[in-house]
Amino acid sequence: MTHRNASSPRLKVAKTCEGPSRTKQSFKEECQIDNIIAKYHKTGVCDHLARTKGQYGDFIKHSDYRTNCDRIIEANDMFDRLPSNVRKRFSNDAVEFLNFVQDDNNVEEMISLGLAHPREKAVAAKQETAKKESAEKQTQTEKTT
Image (cartoon, rainbow, N blue to C red; front, side, top):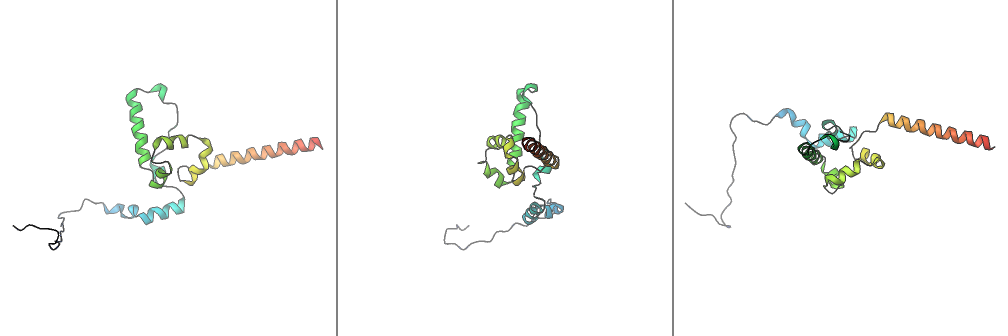
């Protein structure tokens, strides 16, 4: 048996896998980064939104300690599944992320990050409110003139 050292010629090592592959080729297109980015640019939404639905409510009053711990673990897992650029935006801190998403002032940035969809109903409601406000202002100016 000979011993190798730093000046010994390099040996090429290869592994030959025999038998059927366990890799599912049906996911090939779905896993290509170019396809993922193209889909994001086309739709403006990341796939994680389809996998994870928002859950809102006051769960503290009706839960035991174990359930709350499980929810925290689940929240951390959901955060870890977000794209790396989104996690980086929140310093890889799930608490900072949760504080951000709970603030109504951050809706526009959430949409731009792909964390939320623009709500057509919300847009329609804002437009309706704006129309009412402008009608009220017009009525007030007519009364003053």
